[in-house]
Image (cartoon, rainbow, N blue to C red; front, side, top):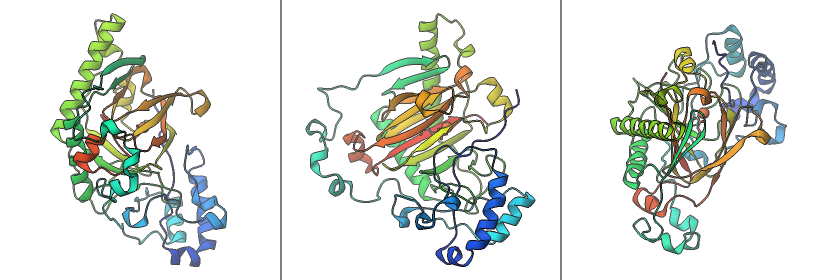
Length: 360
Ligand SMILES: O=C(O)CCC(=O)C(=O)O
Ligand SMILES: [Fe+2]
C-alpha cells in the first residue's frame, strides 16, 4: 500500500532581524508560494510564523536564545522552493549551529528549590521503601508499553551518550521548516539523518560529515525490549508467533528528541520510513528518560478522540504491526517528575529525552 509522505509538523523562520525588517514584502510573496507548496499538509501543533500577526512575529521559543541551535534545512530542488528562497534571502545562508547541552543548561538546584523535591527522593539512590515496579501491557494490537523497563544505570548511560553526541557535529538542534515555525524540541539523528523538511531524502545539515552511529548498547536494549514484548504477546494473546502482531526489527535510525518543560509535539504519524518498512509494520520503539510526558495516541488526528498515557523515565513504548500508523504526539512535559537519583547522576536539564528507534 503506497503511503503518501506528509509528516509535516512546523516551519521555521530563520531570518535575521535585519532580514526581517528589510524583506517583509518579499517574505509575504514567498509565503504564498510556500503555503501553496505545503497546502496539502496539516500542521498539527506549532504556530506558523508567516501568518502570525505582526506583534507576534518573533521567534516563539520558550528557551533562552543562546542555547538554541538553528539550521537551515536544504530545500528540495523544486522551482517553487528555489523561488521562495530567493525571495526570502535564504538561499545563501549557511547553518548556524550552537550545541545544545541537555545536561548543564543552568543550575537545576537553584531553579527547582529544595521544596520541589519529595523528601523521600533526595538521596543518591532509588528509594528502597518505594521500589519501582515494572509493568508490561498490551495497549492495542501491536502496541506495547513496558513501564520502568530501563534501569537507572541504563538511563544514565543514555543521557551521557546523548549529551556527548549532542554536543558534537550533527548534535542537537531545533528543527523546523524553511519558511515557518519551529518544532518545540531539540533533535539529533543517529544512523540516518531525518529532518521535517527533507525527510530521509538528503543530508540537510552542513555541519555533519558522515552520520552518527547508534551506540551498540542502545541497539541491544531495543532488541531486549522487543523480545520481552513478544513474550508478553505470546503469554496474553496465546499467539505462538508474536511477530505476526508485532514484527521484529533491527534499528538503523534513532531520532533523539529533547523536550524542555515547554516542549510538545503535535499529533502525527511516523510514515517517512521506506514503503517496505511501513508495509511490514516494522515497529517504532520509544525510550523515555527524564521528566514525564503526557502522550496521546489514536486512529485519527483528533485530540478529543485520542487516548492519553503518561510516559515516565525508563518507560519503553512500542508501536508496530496494526498500530504502526497511529497518530501520536506529546501534549505536555510534566515538570519536576524526573527521578531525582537520575538528575543527581547526570545533571539532566529540566525536560525529557526521547529516543525513537526505527528501521528505514
Ligand atoms: O516524544 C515522544 O514520545 C514521541 C516522539 C515522536 O513521535 C517522534 O519523534 O516521531
Ligand atoms: Fe512520531
